[in-house]
Amino acid sequence: MIDASRKRVFIADDSLFFRMRLGEILTDGGHAVTSAKDGRELIGNIANNSEGIDILILDLHMPDMDGFEVLQWIKDNGYGGKFPILVITSVYDPMEVIGRLKKLGVARLISKAYTPEHIIFMVNNVLYSDCVARGQKRFRVPVSIPVDFKVGERSLTGFILNISDNGIFLHTKEELLQGTLVRLVFALPHNERVMRMHGIVRWTTVNKAHNTLFCGSGVVFSEIEQEDQESIVNFVKTEAGKFGLE
Image 1 (tube, rainbow, N blue to C red):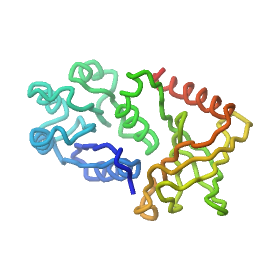
Image 2 (image 1 turned 90 degrees about the vertical axis):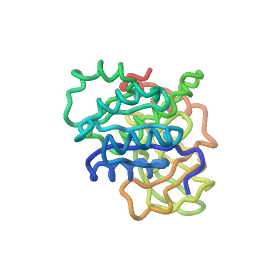
Image 3 (image 1 turned 45 degrees about the vertical axis):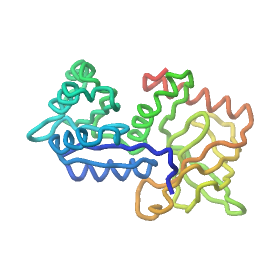
């Protein structure tokens, strides 16, 4: 079950492989996903229901109507600023097109050589940038940290694939229902301190846990020592700085 706070992501890419791959990653990351196979289909969807899009992921290199033409159409037809746009490409050199894309209202440009952790991080950072604008400097950064966790008396293992100052994405095939209390034990990279804390499952991919590569649960910290909290805050701030998010 995914909670009601999930966002609506629209993917426009002429490659069925990338549409399916991105769709699976983002669905497993807690979002609702819709897609279009080309620019013409995309602008039809925007004209029909622009309010149903929380973020657009747009491939630049598409036949008939490419990403640049779509962006110009969005700008010319009054849809600029209706939703953030994240452009994805394997063709263009970012240094050559970044200025042009900014003028067309693009929030981010990323390569198709992404990892699941990276795409979730980038999408969530754009989607929840309003928190930063309100003074809540909360970032979620991609990691790969082994974690031991307990549910009741069961001892389990998994990986933390991203972390913020108030929670983690726990990569596991265990069927953790929303509201489940988990006890977490892990150490941050380059830090010998073993952290122990409690968390509550906020959303989960339980219905698809055995059929996807990117499965797990979003866990919010519910009980954490101050020293551990400070360590996580400092770690996230440092990692976010590496992405230019300070």
